[in-house]
Length: 63
Image (cartoon, rainbow, N blue to C red; front, side, top):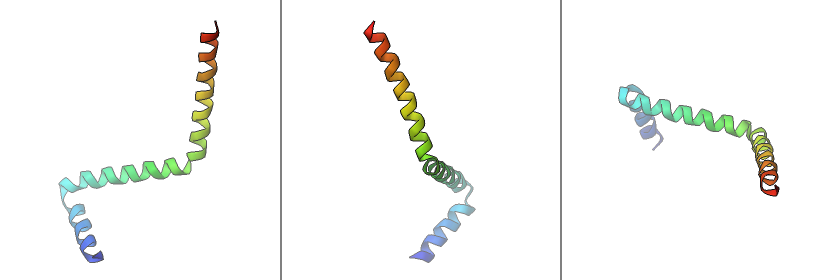
């Protein structure tokens, strides 16, 4: 099973059509890794932005 996967991966790497697919998979993997590394920072940033938006909306509707 593992050798079959290695052969398929090797064939995918050698094919020029498959190279685009491989590049997309690698880019997605890198984005996911970066998102996981900075998860806490991203969540804090979004909560801060949403809090500010909520305050602005409250000010608009209170008038």
